[in-house]
Figure (cartoon, rainbow, N blue to C red):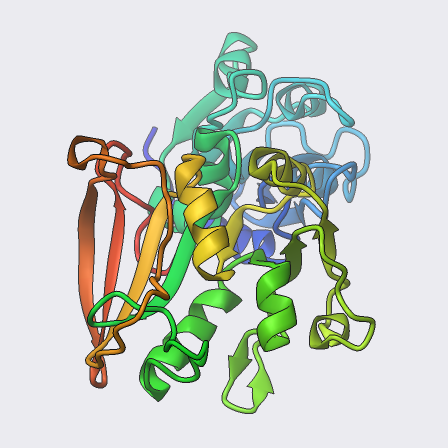
Length: 347
């Protein structure tokens, strides 16, 4: 049976509802329950880890038996496992739902398979409705599921001859206003912005994402890695989110902890030492290199040792885009050995 116009409208509504949920360990999901006549009788969304999933949230608004013969329209395939909550596929079956329309398959090895369970119980199932819109909504979560960790972007600004600062250490500003505005926009799309203690002590950055003089509505959580103490009056302490401090050189443990906290997109902006350490550890999914038409000379390179002592060990990149930004040029790239980075709009 083809998807009806009422179901298409319901999916559009479900996507709107999904956006109400927080971005974190679990995906943002919305659900709408339609009567056999195609009228909306309930709706819901997932409100965070440990709370009812979208389907159950919607069903909870109905009296027992009210969903019998109804259609559930959901942005993600109903789950098929018991975690902090029970399987949504079973909840729909028990409620008497006769048809389910969903946008995206659940990629989880454990949580997937809900559609198969529904069909086995005699429920009619249609998938793929507005799949691209649903994918765009939870692209970060899907990427994290694929990688088993957050997506990591490494950013730096450099002179045309590859320097991150002048010989005296000054670096503000190598690039112009258009490039700096682009950085802030990309910061606002991340869940966490990572620097080293060296950057905190040298530059005292606020680690906020600014839209001119104002802050973007979404702010990445500030993360500081290193053993040196951050001063109590450092600007990072005035960030809207409490900073996370990691006194370790084990970047994989940091990324694993951020993943456990629900971080999907990490934006590394911590200077040559930290950027090089992430690359050497194999923790780079996207590179943003802002190149300014200026020559500095000296030894303050944008990158240091990345574990490539010979040309045959070089990390080869594939360019996704060359983006002019005023007089500057942004190279957006990903490792050639990895699959293409998420589409533009994702960090």
